[in-house]
Amino acid sequence: MREKTEKKRLAILRALKASNTPLSSSKITEQLNTQGLEVSERTVRLYLLELDREGLTENLGKKGRRITERGRKETAAARAYEKVGYLAARIDQMTYNMSFDLASQSGTVVVNASLVGHDQLRPACPLIRRVYDAGYAMGRLLKLVAPGERIGDVIVPDDCVGIGTVCSVTINGVLLSRGIPTHNRFGGLLEMQEHQPTRFVELIHYEGTTLDPLEVFIASGMTDYTGATSTGNGRIGASFRELPAESRDRVLEVKGELEKTGLGAILTVGWPGQSLLEIPVGEGRLGAVIIGGLNPVAILEEQGIHVHSRALASLTDFETLFDYRELDDRVQAFL
Image (cartoon, rainbow, N blue to C red):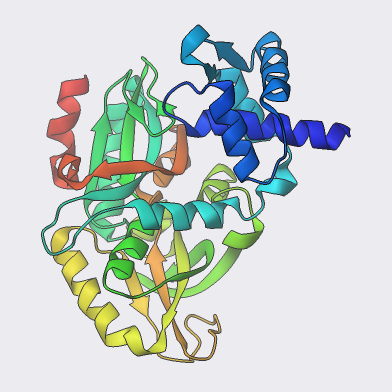
């Protein structure tokens, strides 16, 4: 009984978290019932009163309820086993919802959010440029977000500046728009030798984790962008995708178009049915290695500049992105 109660409480919090506006008890009841959770509106109201008392929700009167920051943290921490596979589902959701059209270079792309202290922004710039210069970033575009503004669920604090880097999941959306489905295998640390990819030394499968692999590797100090950008020998973030075997020529065409647009991130494409960088692929498929979207900010942690990052943070309009070579000039507006 206690487990069923907790499941319904979390379902209410998640419904409120996913909504951009307050929800009434009747609307919440409708959503829970569509999820297969049989509950009456009266029961939902009782749960909401309890959540109000605990500071997890806020009663706005006739407008309904909204989730509090404490409630958001509760949904992030609770029942971790239920969230295994959440990342894979989030990738699919963002892939489907992005609207970027490669031909017209318009629409939305997927971005990651990173927060850098205002006083650390100037020394961070040459390090970020260094990763882009080496070709270890997801293309050559990024964005800056001012204090008080939002990147998805992330609100930039007053003492920070937000950095939006293009997420590699954007590649999925572009390929899908060309009729090429993508299967996401894993994210990992890719060993570079003399600027060439050799093998994955660590990997985390998307279906079996609640966290973004690159976030884990960055926080654990396992990356080596300093070496990769200086000597060509190091470890960078990358992911492994599988694509239909027949799509190879079309994928290579898209790769070239992406590079011209500033979104180039397909590092290498394998051959049908053949292993790629020691990773076997299924029959009728080929492998592709995609550069990690958080790579430009990951080097900051190595150099002692703390960064709080969240992958797959939101969708953003392509027109809000700028070339990394403009970074110094753009930063002046925040200093």
